Amino acid sequence: MREGKRRILTYGTFDLLHVGHVRLLQRAAALGDELIVGVSTDDFNSIKGKSAQYPYQDRAEIVAALTCVDEVIAEENWEQKADDIRRLDIDALVMGSDWEDDERFAHLCDLCELVFLPRTEGISTTSIKDDLSKGA
Ligand code: CTP
Image (tube, rainbow, N blue to C red):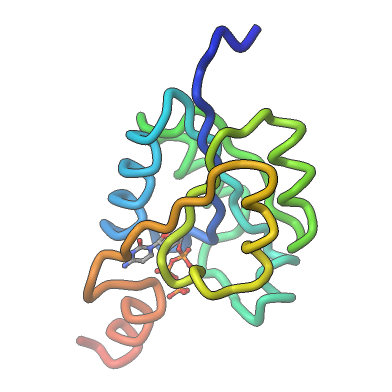
């Protein structure tokens, strides 16, 4: 039974978990009572043109270990979001502001609240990988 809990959903790759990820997840969790995180699978990352350092199972396990996260699901394609929102009875979909102008999200505002949170400046998985490859 749901008992009036406000459920929040967000998605991401969450590779090489960093403080930008943690802050995003904490802020998302603070918008409701339960936070569900869709972690991108390795196949979906290939579709997005991304390659994660850690495999899906590890990234999912790390995200699930955070105290602000209640449940992890697999993000396998662009189209599943509407189904996830209905199936999981989601009240708000939270994304980083980098997704604000993406038309793949705009139509979801018919199904639940859409919230875009500002990114943490100066850090990303890409910049960490770049720094490591330069020996920085
Ligand atoms: N995020 C954030 N602040 C950052 C980096 C990420 O708020 N500095 C948010 C993103 O907006 C997204 C979530 O964390 O909502 C997962 O982002 P992800 O793409 O997995 O992380 P990035 O570090 O942006 O990875 P990449 O460099 O591979 O794009």
